[in-house]
Amino acid sequence: MQNEFEPIALTGASDQDVSLLDILDHVLNAGVVIHGSMVISLAGVDLVYVGLNVVLTSVETALRNLRAEETRRTPR
Amino acid sequence: MTRVLAYCAFLHNPAISLPEIGVAGAKVQEIAHGELKLLWSDVEWPFPESTLQASAVEFHQVVSHIFSQTGVAPFRLLSVFDDQQSLADFIAAHQAGFVADLKRLQHMVQMECVLYFAPQAGVRPTGTEYLQRKAELLQRTEEFVGSMKHALADLACEIRVRESRTGGRIFVLVQRGNEKKFASIVQELPIPERLARRTSGPWPPAEFLSGAVKTPPVAGPK
Image (cartoon, rainbow over all chains, first blue to last red; front, side, top):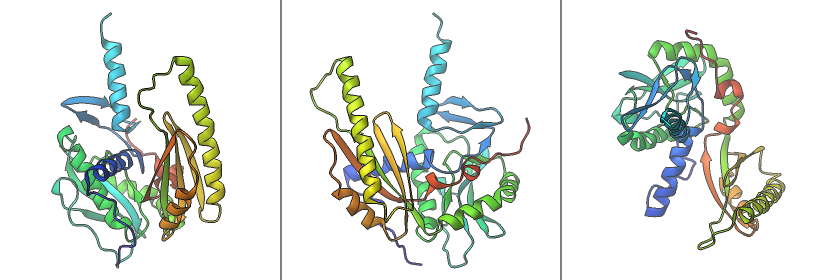
């Protein structure tokens, strides 16, 4: 079957940057979200322990949550 | 640990070619239930940060392979199932909703226009100036969205707008084949002062999936 679409540019420095951001944005933030039990781990740190029935979140949101959690835990 | 990564769902058609390799070089496999087909592969979970970017591109390539041929309901990259049985249960439970959405959106694509505030080099506004400027820009964004809706009235099947901290994001559902027409109409619209725009697409019409498909409830231990 013929591809009817223009491919998303992945060549050229600036195009590549923009397209990669678009790709990350879409694969992380757009589409079907399932609920489940898992830990999202980045940089060796379990960012979000989402328990049994919590909606998955984007990395940006996960990082924000982690920062908030760190702030909360920091002794005053 | 190994988990089952879901890529996308689409309506079964024997003419559709399937990708062979998915995230981290894993073999892409299919599961079918009635008219519905879903692609998945085994993945090591969780993804290490060092491979997240590559995984995103590989994930995108699998979805794009199918999307270039037919309508898809994409999953999000971080959506994984415990095992193949969980995936089979999921697809059996939600088949009707997916099929209805896929039939409704089969010949549609999602085009996007992001409006953002053009940065002004060397300008450091006070707090009040910043808020005034932001209010002005939000108003201009709304005006632009209005003119865009008017200009796309004959082309767009549906338009949705989301405000963001830096401007706005406009999602437009159009028939396949109208992507260039969309781009030329949007490019001809005058852009308000201090705003910039970027169009992209075609994307799978994820924004236009029904709520029950986008965030399906999953039975499990409470």
